[in-house]
Length: 624
Image (tube, helix red, strand yellow):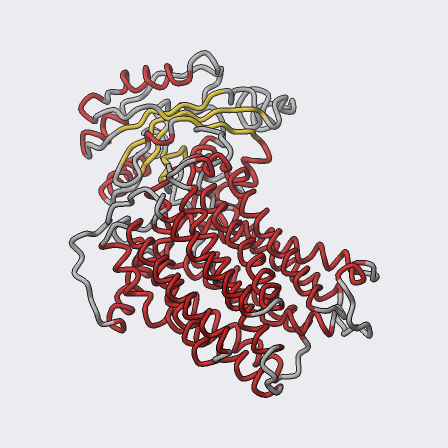
């Protein structure tokens, strides 16, 4: 697999124009909304009650289209070529921003609220395309990096847009109007360079009833348990982030003693953290969808959310501090670190979830799955507002609300990982593998994205199954010797991954027959199964002759076979040479540099044990 940095995508036409277009859209959304806030709050002479009323109704108007039109937007993105839809959506944005400019000049709140509703519609239409187009434009190993760049670009665009919109309106409606209209035009121009992304369901019959279609797209979301729980995780992220951002203005004033500049500083810290976490996902995951990062993200959100409460649990007596003055106050740098780290771990949490949804959902349904995700996101954002108001009505301070949502995050995470142990299993295996080894992978594109397949691999250490599982994007059913299957700690991971224990005929013939039956059932259901045809760990680092079990499997269920090889693993931790499990001497190759290589597919008719053994030997080469 290529180790090229994700930033190289910014030099490609298949990604760069889309990245620029979506970033400009996020910028313009927030520039317009903040310009509207500044105009209503400071330039129209409204009393405090009126300002509060419009401040509350504005977010509701923006989010309403997500409830009403997300399902229809998902159908559009599925039925028609996506780049063309993007260009039409960007033309629509120009028209909406022209309406907003008229509202700025006339200082007409009804016109501006109409423009706000239409910008919500713009975001609703763009949302399903935003994430559904990435799997079409990117290669498999680029998916995490591409999502990381999108999340980074979005978080920074939101921050810069808010600042730019407020500053532009401070100079007057002309400047604010020029900013939003010009940005919309530039967004349309960049969209013209996006290469075609063919329709994934061109024969789809369009359902014009938004209510029945909403119910239908939610059905696509719940169809796959892992996808559904990933969507719930994404929606929970919006709830968690919504509670924090909605409380931020008052938190800045009463607990930090700062002006609007301090609020912008805190938002900048959070945005930088999200951007950094999103970009780090590619490096930490090894260029693949690594859901083991999700529990790590949830742990960080809880830990640093809790620390934010303990860092400043009581209101401050200071007032009207500038950003520099705030940084000079005692304890400020702890708060700075907390906001950056909450953002960092938020990136670890959200990027793998989006990549997992993109990789697991059926391509012909992905846009509608994203549409269903957007509906649930909107619902959770509304829930975040209700949660904040409810906690305040109960007398909780803002710091206590932060404490409550951090604790709630821990409970939700435990619940999700109980429902889908795969998340926790991948986290534990990710920690183990990345602690013990440095892994390079090659040829992963040879492993089918969908459908049944059999992987055959040489067997070097007790960790082989974890290494292979951590390298391949799809879930794998492993066939493994029952004594390895029952190793403490690893047993939880193997059982969660639905590994299939096997024994020799003389040891337990019933277990042997049951293992072959489970393999056949797994292949019949379209899963990937991995076997180690040597029948045991190598005792000298060399590949032992392959046994005939692979031929028995293929005779009963002919499926494609992908030969694989583990390279450089002999003598590392948990191999039989110098292993603490095999000899008293401690292992000499801690953090060994190893490789996992997948070869080209072999047709089942040609996949004899001898042919597969020769393929695996060739893949391993001289590097034992």
